[in-house]
Image 1 (cartoon, rainbow, N blue to C red):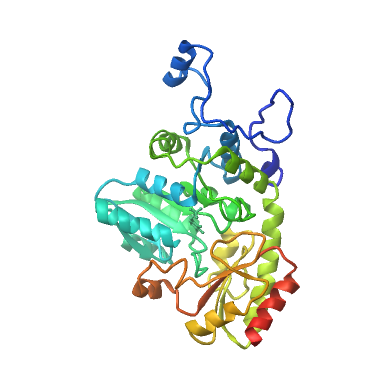
Image 2 (cartoon, rainbow, N blue to C red):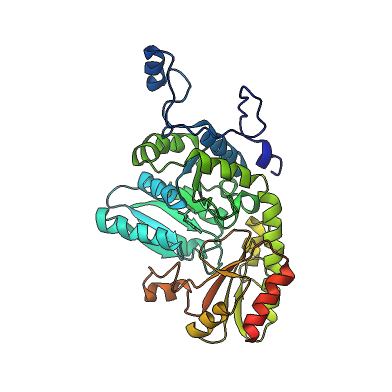
Length: 386
Ligand SMILES: *Cc1c(COP(=O)(O)O)cnc(C)c1O
């Protein structure tokens, strides 16, 4: 895995023998003759045509993520949401039904509302805690199951192999948003799931400087996705952003180890703190779904959710007293980031639905960065004390 993060794609040997993948910052590619152009359009000859249809720098990234997730083909998108929307549009038609984990990224929730309003594509939420619960929620018109695990922001987990096995009986594809884990911590395709999506904006990029999405799956589905939803809706990634991701992935394993060990330590300290009510972290010994965590995740990852004793104003006052830790949505950056889901990332979810998902007004989400763990804790502790 570690070696594949650095070497997995087909390397282009350019005229200068450059070690890293050059940035092919070009919108189009010229043909040596009209006949060559015609052959490329007809698919009779390999070669680039136009950067929305394919670009060498972007292709190198797509090959690398496909190897890391153990899938047949990867595709890069202009954002995580461009990837999520392309996949959901590809998987559904009017009047279909999508079954989702009970808790989703806020904009994915927004997209589901839009699909329902425009195309009568309905959806349901489920914690998917047992086979029975899952079977009860599958309808005749369910055309895909969409899962986040750990669920953002409550950090509950969903048993991927259980869901994949049940879905297979019904012939329903399972899509997993693997943003929180990256392939280094969790590989959903190995558990029998069909499609993996990443907001590569987060850990894969890892440096807070790019918005990007990645999708990996079987050849047939991915080829169709490339030729329709990616090409014709057009949310493609730029060559420069692809290059930033190739660069980020080279250190993904080292960063994930450090994010995880820092987060495990912060979670332990929060748990012991008298001002803290609850801590939700998959890497904790007393996580309520520890056996599932053990089965599918290498470590607990870098994100912690917790509740202070008190209400929304205590949560907001605590955040305002932090000095090192930045108040910002996003996660997976070198900097430790903190946000308040009920008023930020999940503000679009109606209050009643938020409560069902376990997103209370005092819930805080922390993306633990790569700083010295003593400094992260020092900042949290002084804000808790004051
Ligand atoms: C950020 C995020 C997304 C959306 O990705 P963008 O790159 O911001 O479009 C989707 N899913 C999860 C779990 C995320 O954290």
